Image 1: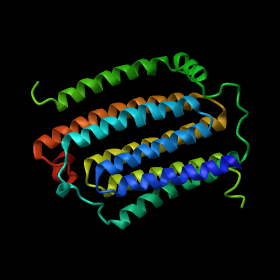
Image 2: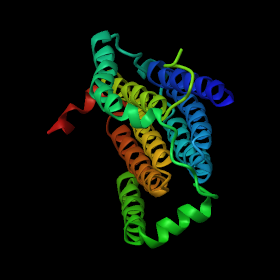
Image 3: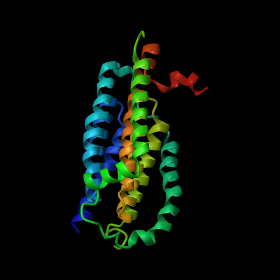
Image 4: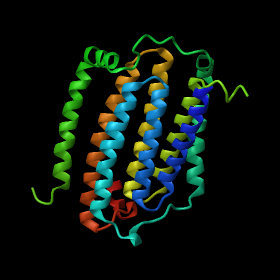
Length: 166
Length: 105
């Protein structure tokens, strides 16, 4: 029962903040809505017993990526006249929402017999840093190392793009 | 109310689908570059929620590893995307997607 109450509260916060992100004219308001959405998402991860992912979500997303984004929004200091409100393309919005549901609806329906069963029994320490780290550094070591190259490329690329004169 | 009360993984998947739809709607209907980037983040997070849900269903932490990879890629994407926004702002002093139609090729 407690799980259900928490789930519905968090889902309402998540979807409400998601709608706030795409409807606000001011990008700062959108960014703050996104931070709240990420917090709700982290709580949902915790509800799914993914403790490490929940913590990383708060640290990296809400703490890192969103700070970078708000920093750039404030750096550019847009004039209020330059900000365009959401265009009332109702058809686009509705079709996107419905499209996602229509495509994923059958998938969910197929999965729902499995979904309505009780999920697999969890081993002790499921989703904590030891279990995830063990998986990452044994089975997925090569992708992990490749990720460091991707991040290095992103750093160099961002510097080259944003610097006035090299 | 059997549909609502016992929370099953299908509930999380529906939530993830709706969140993804909100992200798609944001990318399609907003002209502000920042909001378009933030909607992309919403879509990435919707997919992450699915990964974590399936991980829970199967009792396997591989999904969590993928989510951590996606978070790292999202950080790289945000940093390059914001650098592009700064470069575009230098060009036209605006961040309106309509002004950069030439990038469509």
